[in-house]
Structures are given as C-alpha cells and as structure tokens.
Length: 89
Length: 486
Image 1: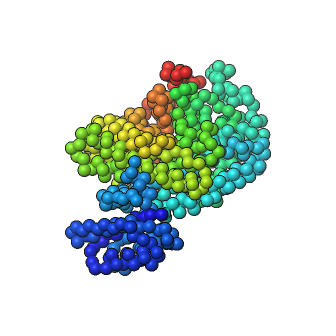
Image 2: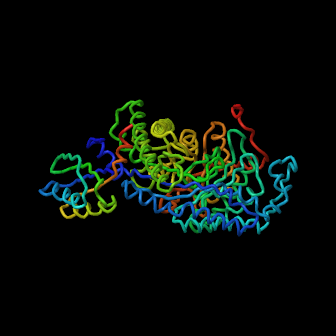
Image 3: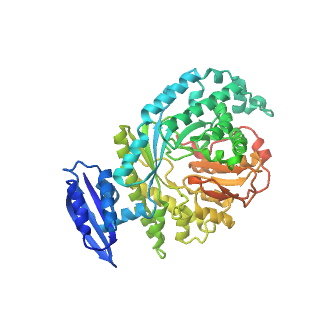
C-alpha cells in the first residue's frame, strides 16, 4: 500500500529529519520526495510505501502528527488511492 | 509507480481541509419484504434481526474508511423497503373495510362524499410500533437516520398506505431517526389528488404535534413526484422495490469546492464555467465512488450508486446560492437565478456521469432554504420567494426543500403548493420533492432555529388566496401525453 504524506509549516532545520525518522522507525519506505518553499513557508510531499511495515494508516497518522507538533509543522497522511481516483482517468 | 504533481496533491488537500469536501453519507439499502408476518411482534423481530445482521458493522466500517483515506464521512444511514408494503400483512390492517379504501381510489363510488376514514386505533398503533422498532434498531447500529417509512400512492391507496399515512403525525413526533416519504405523482400515472389533499392535512398535524420544537417533525417527511428508488439522502431515501437485497449507496457533496473553483473565474464565458464545474464534479464523484467501493468491499455488500448532489450546510462556504452569486447573480432569487442554477445542475450531472457508470439517486444541486445561509439571507431580503423557488425547482435536482411557512397556512393551501410542485415533476419527467414546514405559532419574517444540519431560516410568505375548491375536487390528474412512451 502506498500513501502520500504532506508537511506544511514555517521552514526550520530538522523538518525532513523528523518526518523521515518517524517513517523509518516503522519501516515505511520513502519512494519519492518533493519540496517547495515560498515566503518562509515550507511544503514537502512524500510518496511512501507500507509494504514492509506493520503499522496502520491511523497509527502512523497519529505518530506523524505528534512528531510534527513538536517542531511546529502540520503533517497529514492519506491513502494513495484518493489521489489516483481524483486525478487519473 | 504513479506519481502526482504537487498541484494535484495540494488541490485534493485543499478541497478536504479548506473547502469542506466530504462524503455526506454512506447509506445501506436493505430489502425488508421478507420480514412480513401477520403477527406484529414477529414482524418487528424479523425487521430487527435483518437490519442488525446487515448493518451492525456499517458505522465502524465508515469510521475506518475515514481514517484510512482522510476523508470525512458525515452520516451513516439506512434505507428500507417502503414500509407500507409490509404493513398489509398485518391482520389488524386487513380488517379495514375495503369499501372505505376504495372510495378514496374511485371517487365515483360516492362522488360528493368520500367517507371519513375509519382506521382503527389498533391499526395506527401497529404502524407506530413498527416505526419505533426502526428507530430503536437504528440507534442500536449507530446510524443517524433510517429512511423508508414510506408509501407509494401515485395511482391509489392500499389499506396499508392509508394506515401508514395516518400514523405519520404521531410517528414523526415520537421517533428521532425515522424518515418518511410519500410518492403521490409520477409522469407515467398522473397525480393522486386525494393524496395531495390528505398530505396537506397530515403535514399540518405533524407541525401541530411538534410545535414545541418549531414543527421540526415536518423536516423528516418528503412528499415526492417521480421518487427515485436509490436515493441515499434524507429525508426522502428509501430502498425501492426494484433494488437488490442489500447495497451500499454513497452521497457525496461539495458546494464549497465548486464555489472556490469558479471564484477566480470572474470573466470566464459560459463554456469555461461549465467545463470547470464538470471537471470538479468529476473529481469529487471519483472520490465518492472510491469510498463506496471500499465500503462495499469491507462490508461484503454490493455497491449500488454514487449520488453527487451539492448539498449546503451551515458552514459559510457550503452554499449552493453562494455558487450562483459567484457566477454573477447579485442575490439568489433575482433575475438570472434559474439560468445559473440550470448551468450548475447540468454541469454537475455531466461531470458525475463521466466519473462513474453508476451515478444515481438525485444527483445535481439541492436548494434547501434553511440549510443554505445565502438562501436564507436572500429570503430575508424578499428577493427569494416561494414562487421563484418553484421556478428554480424545475431545473434543480429536487424541489421545494426546507421551506418555512406561517403555521396558520390552511392545509388546503399546503396541498395547493404540493400540487403545483408535483405538477412540475409530473409534466417534466423529473423527480420533485417537497418539504414544507408550517411553523406553528410563527408569522412571516420571524426567524426559526432548527440547529444542526437543518440550519435556521425565516418564515416565507405564502400568497393569501384560497385553492380549497380546487383541492376538494376528487380523483387523479391524468398522466401527461408523453407518459405513453411504449
């Protein structure tokens, strides 16, 4: 199963590290990562793979939220199917 | 591996987080025909166990989909076979003299004097007990509403139909979750004007019975012309007799999403407007279909339809009138409104049809006055009137919906409004729903607060001229010429 993680917030050191460490802790693989930056505002989007992980989407969603709260960024995760259904014919 | 641009990902996130895109309802349609039994107690047990066995996991599955996909699912609902089809099996209902019922179906029997209905107290009580049974089981399986306490009387009444209709004032005042509908006209068979007359009285009685709560009982009853069999929305949803044993229907909404995409299109021509509405409708329908299929898979129940209906809520961006005003109508109800609504409804349907082969229900745009902030504002300014709403309903997907009128409105006038609306549906081969709320004790311009999804509204004026002689005529309006399609 694949999912899309998005991270939004004010830029500061350690955002990529925090998010990727949380994902790595649960054996979730990052397969694509993009980031953009405008007016001190940071947006990062990751496509991640759950194949080797035992954690559920709900659980990782809570872990990511916790980690994000600590450094003041907003992290959400959604099943990839949502984006495929909406944006691909 | 599929990859997505950041614009695509952010568009989806904005739709959900900022523009209020949600799945309005996951509705499980359940056939109850096999629950019939001459004994009331046995019938109740049958209904309870069938609904429980099929729907016990509905709410849990809906929550799990919410969590996995990050899409809010607002309501969990059940629709059932129209209950009047079951009631006829009850012994107590069979004791009603046929002659009494037939005088309602063929006024020629007693042309100038339809007998007062003598339905026994026990028969009415049986209907009420079935409704309470539905109310209890829906609480037990944690669904918000159960629709299907309904009767299909477009061509005439059965004993059970009349029993059910007579029980409505009590049923809708003592139950919380039970929703009811009565179909009294179709393009194919014409309009049952005796039912139109009766429903005017019944709506008045429901209003009286719930007058302490702003006559809210009337919000749980929809009178229909050309009712659809797979509607997942309330109050008018029921599981039609052509439907399968059990299926999952999903209603998806998102007026806020449509509104925000046309907000930046101040100078766009009509083709561009239609195109962007279609594309957005496509996207939200696809999301609805994804949720419907996933729910069907997890519950091991076949997928039925997706209903893409722009349904307003009290959230500021969730307004259908707001979309019309973004298109350039200063105040909804003013000149241009009907054309703007026609463009919107049609484009929403087209986008939905491209996205899913099984679009059904009512699909289009709803215009419930009390639930839509901009519509309520327009009514306060006297730009939006019942007469203009009547015109708008000829191009929207439903009809006169959640309209508060003075409690003193005579029942025959309520019947007159129903007949006008149903005539639009009958002649134009279109579904029409009518949900009027005569708020007892309130006058024109007074504010009524319902709370929750039902919102708040203003009492709208009804023209003070009688149609009593017309409504008191008996019989059926003949079906229109284009009913003869075969």
